[in-house]
Image (cartoon, rainbow, N blue to C red; front, side):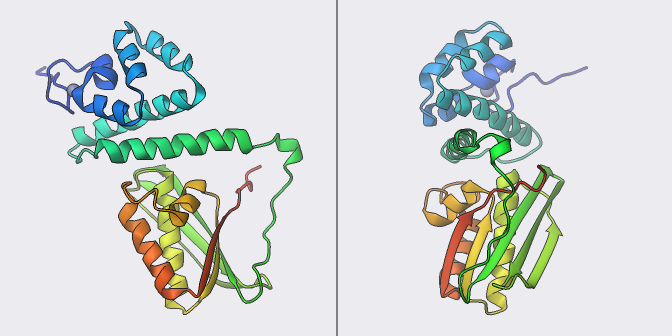
Length: 246
Ligand SMILES: [Zn+2]
């Protein structure tokens, strides 16, 4: 068989795991953006995958989380490029990695033991407001979906919609899509006082500040914000954990 051994990211010959995750000139930029140059240099010295993982596990928690997510995202990036996709900017990729690492670390710290958590119940919106609960689903690039429910203060359903979604990048993409569909429907129906509830801390963050403007979904997020500012008289977004599976 005539097998092409070149690295799909840089075109260099003889791609192996060590080259892909630590030595390739393209991945070095991502490690650098993540402020993990020292860890990357250590990984480059390791002679086996097991040693490389042990090196990562010996790092402080924040570095460890970023490094693990970096390996995962870089592997997906490489496979996407191999199938003809366009490589993402290292700054965008590292931004996504840092956001997800931050969210995972926060979730690990904020989650108290299940026994004292209790179930979360839907709460009524403030007077005259409508509450939108949204959720996205993601399993793979071909399996995903979105949904939302708009209710008034009495709990009556004003509108509910759901749909399938393909070509999603990740679970966050599904959440953003659910949000976009909900906001569009609410504005089309002339609703003006909205409370949005999501189980994605990243989405709440994305709607509250500009930290996701440079991410791959920055354009969609900006469109959502534009629609919110143009169509709603009042708007707030809250995080609410989804524990219907527990
Ligand atoms: Zn390479």
